Length: 498
Image (cartoon, rainbow, N blue to C red; front, top):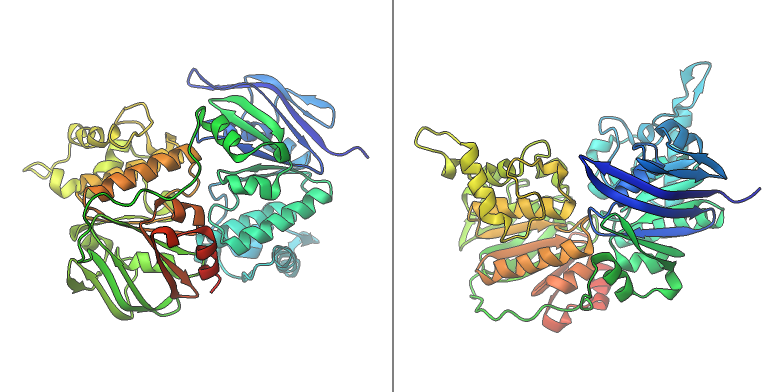
C-alpha cells in the first residue's frame, strides 16, 4: 500500500473581505513530520482547519491519496484519517479522563457502553505516553499540562493517518515533552503523517524532518530541517533578522535593596515547602520550574488565589494574608494566569472592557457609571505604548486578537490600574517568536519604570532571555538562585532536575 499522502494546493481563504491565505501549498506524507511555523496570524490555524474540514477554502483543493476534494466536512476529514489537536482545549471538563479519551467513539456491547473497555483503553494510551494520570479523575480537576496530555491521548487513540498537533508542548514539562517527542517519532516510523505546529524553534530539530514557514498568509520557506538553521527560520517567520537568543543587558537603573514582594519560609501543603523568594522594584525575577514543581502555586499566593499554610508573604515591608484577588488588586498586584482564556481574558467582550475592568472603581463617574468613552480612552492609553496589533478599535472583540496581543491587552489592564507588582505565569505560552520579543521588551521597560515583576515559566529559553535573577524550583522547593551570567540553560536544567 502506498503511504498516506495529503496535499493542499493553491488554497485561498478570506474572512470579512480580507484574504488570510494566498494560494498556499502544503504536503503531508506518511512517515514524515512537517513542522509548520509562523507568527500568530500567519495563517497556520486557518490552513489546518481547512484540512480538518472546519473551514471551506474559497479556492484551491485538498488531495488525499490522489482523490481531489474542493472542500471537506469534519466527518469526511476524520474518516480519511485526519486527527487534530488544537492549541485551545476541546475537552469536556465535567467528564472523566477515560470518557474524554473515548469521546465520540465510546466502545459498546449490545448497545450498552462498555465502561470497562473505556477505562482499559485510556489506561493503555496513557501508559504509552508515559504519564501517570488517573483515568477516573475529572478533566476539570487536572492542571493545564495534564489536560493537554489528555487531548493528545484522545487523538492518538483513534486510527489517525495524519496527526496535526497545534502547540502540543506549550504547557508540558520537559519530561512530558520528551515523552511526546518519542511517541511522535514512533508514529512517524509506523507510517503516520504528522504536521507539527510550534513556536519553539528548538523543537523543530528535535522532532521534524521537513519545515514550512507561513508569513502573512503565504509560504515564506519550505525545506529539510537538516539543511535549515535557526536564524533562517526566524528571518522567514518575521521577515527580518533577529539577534541570537541571549541575556538581557544588566539594568541601567538603580534597584533598591528593600523587596516589593517577599516569601519567607512559605509553605502550601501538597504544593511547596519553605520557600524564600524576593522580588525588588525595578527587576525581573523568573521562577523557573517544570510542571508540578510548585512554581505556579507560589505565584498564585501573591494574588489571593491560594493561601499559605505556613510562613509569611510580605508586600512593601508588611506581612499580609490575601483573602481574595480583589484584595490583591487593591494592594497593587497585577496577575496573568497560565490559561488566559479561562482565568484572565473576557473573549466575548471588547478589548476596551478587558483593559478597564480592573480599574472600574477608579474610572467610574460620580454616579458610579462606566461609559464606553471612558473605557475607550483607557484602551488607547496603552494601545500604542504596548504595540498592540489590532484595528485600534476599542470595540474589537478580545477573542479576535492573536495570543500575543491578548497578553499585551492583559498587561495593559494592570498598567491602567497602576499595579506596582506584576505576577505573570507562562506569559508567552502559545505566543510566536516576534510577539515574545515584543513582550520581553515591554517587561524590561516596565521594570525600568520601577515595577517589580515576577515571571513563572517552564521555558528555560524564556528564563535566559528575560531574567535579571532566577530561582529554580524542583519538587516543591527552591533548588537554586541564579544571577547575571549564572543564568544559562545547563544550570537551569540541572537545578530543575532536583
